[in-house]
Image (tube, rainbow, N blue to C red):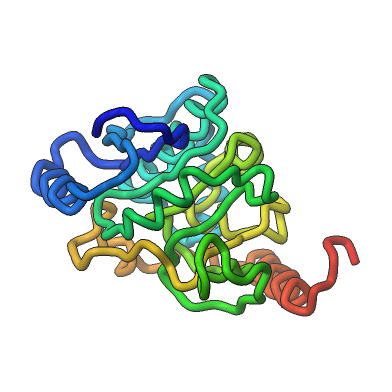
Length: 249
């Protein structure tokens, strides 16, 4: 991981005790053409971040797991570090990813702010509605698309200083999992842009967050009429975004 001419840091979120995952990622990254480092995953709330447990229950019908909170805080902490240190742009990965390092080298050397790309997904977990924004990005047949809805996942993305500042504002109160909150472009105005085909994929390993959260029965408050109305409003906002209707239009 020697210093190179690239100014865009690559940080890889990983639990300090995840020795096997770190070893596997390091082995895959031997051909990396950009400097990278592990970022020790956080487990506790950080300054500037507030957990609204009641909002979480309303939105998800259950409390967040410790893993979900740790994931949220880890990404939030990286954005804070970018702002505190004036880092112009950063590529954020999680340690269960398989990376096209040659493409990442090109991406790291690209001024994303100058291209008006404050946030660019390099992977998503679910297919969703998309529209083409730019063709032949950095190489032929690589397309930037705008995703509408909930593609989920925080495994890989590039973010500029402006994007980090915007997400710090949008995510300062924990109301739902971090990927869920980041996807809500109709609410906070940060476009959910992504690369297709993705230059990063997720390795088939057990999630560090855990899967028990999917087995939890949702509470009564989740099914309350006010919450059903809120989810209906979200669906209408997503529908308008698909149709290209501006916010407030």
